[in-house]
Length: 221
Image (cartoon, rainbow, N blue to C red; front, side):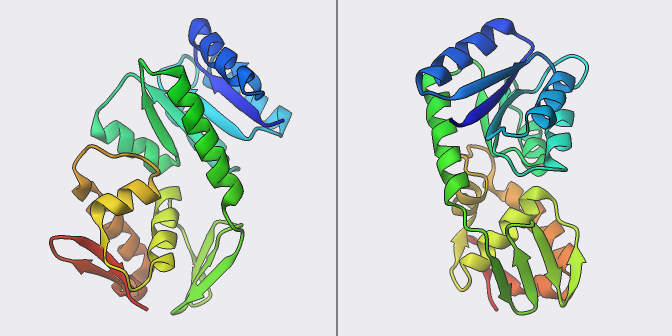
């Protein structure tokens, strides 16, 4: 049985989500704040997915996600009443996989949970090595000419997506939808910021990521 950790300071919201997930035979653990969520996450040791609210007492959603991401790649869905682009980008940089704005349909949430868990299960644990760039998906480590480089969660996902689609011109919208697993309705050019940071960290190897003016990017080996 797959386990979901539901983190929200509203008991009514936790019960609503729990009821719908249990109908699909998920095991659901509840936490009323970030500190309780972290304790449960590490004490249980078998959490397959986390649903986390942003605004909570003691430890907010940002800090909760950041702490979990230091130790785990478990899929995370963020619940938020906010809709500002910078907040969503902050979450993605921390490693959030999906954003769902309140109020939401519980059935849609369950569908997102199932889709994320399928993708998580289907991800192959393998090593990609191209042009001196080595990506270890299982360890979530990138080395360039034998030296490890520090990438954020989304920078790692972005580089992996580029390499796996080498030689293909990728529109910004397609990159956002595939890397963020999210139907992004903001300005797709926000991806330029992520690419700029990624190129900088890759040094000379960053030149393999080519800009396709008016379209997006392409990785050339």
